Length: 306
Ligand code: NAD
Image 1 (cartoon, helix red, strand yellow):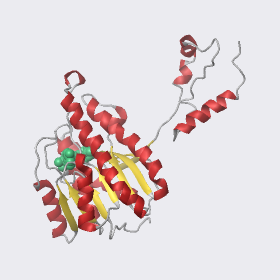
Image 2 (cartoon, rainbow, N blue to C red; image 1 turned 120 degrees about the vertical axis):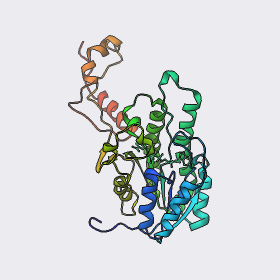
Image 3 (spheres, helix red, strand yellow; image 1 turned 60 degrees about the vertical axis):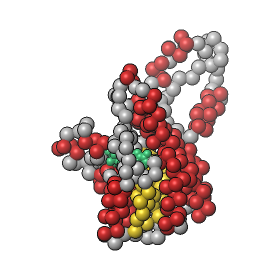
Image 4 (cartoon, rainbow, N blue to C red; image 1 turned 135 degrees about the vertical axis):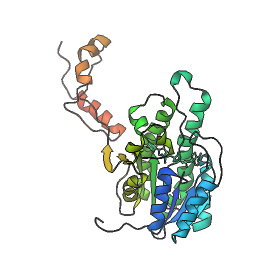
């Protein structure tokens, strides 16, 4: 496909939180490449307060003015089934789901209230689940589907004042990795992106000169490639922003092996602690089975010397 223009003619793409920022950039792109778009947006503040129809309507109007096809949906992603219903009612199908809607409730852990935690979980974790759950039967039936879930560097690496957001964002990784395994035989490919882009979310935390080089449109090519029918990529995690795109994976250290004899003690572990943190001979696990294989291999080893 290299060098060719990727097209999505006749496909339906649902983009959640498409009233602004990254979601709007995805919606405009897919519409310009022939797809029918469901522009979902609740229209609230970046903290998840309030709501309205104008954010989604504006994007729909922009798509239509350019000759594209789009409908608005104003439900919260917590009611994902209603968003997918909009796609089926308007266009008769869904091919691509981009779980992008998000809010922030940044606050130090010491001061966090249950509401800050719960709202973040509802929008990011429940929201991504509900939309994917409603889309999945359609994907299975047609043996085709593409899902993008949106994580964050805060989820991958942690971030001060974002314990709630970090937890919800790393949840996207586990969710996607398992969904990718379940979807594979139905050609349902699922990937996670951790984007960085100028939006109202980052406007308060980054200076304008930095934001100028983080255009949301620059995240689009990765999402376009991953959701295209030619893609074979699934279960992967990508960092993307400012024109840089890289894959992230799990790395396992060499590790220490203890035996169920007199060396099977905390003291024995401390003696081998260097091995636990030694990444000079890494392995790259892709499933729980990899760890069990490691244990089976270890059983072939001679017993510990006295
Ligand atoms: P944004 O605030 O511009 O866009 C998020 C959109 O989601 C908003 O239009 C908002 O109205 C909508 N939304 C919020 N709650 C909703 C709900 N319950 N139902 C439906 N829509 C809802 O921010 P953005 O930067 O474009 O963020 C898009 C996604 O990327 C989010 O998931 C965010 O967490 C993630 N992200 C962004 C960055 C970045 O640098 N911008 C970094 C890491 C992750």
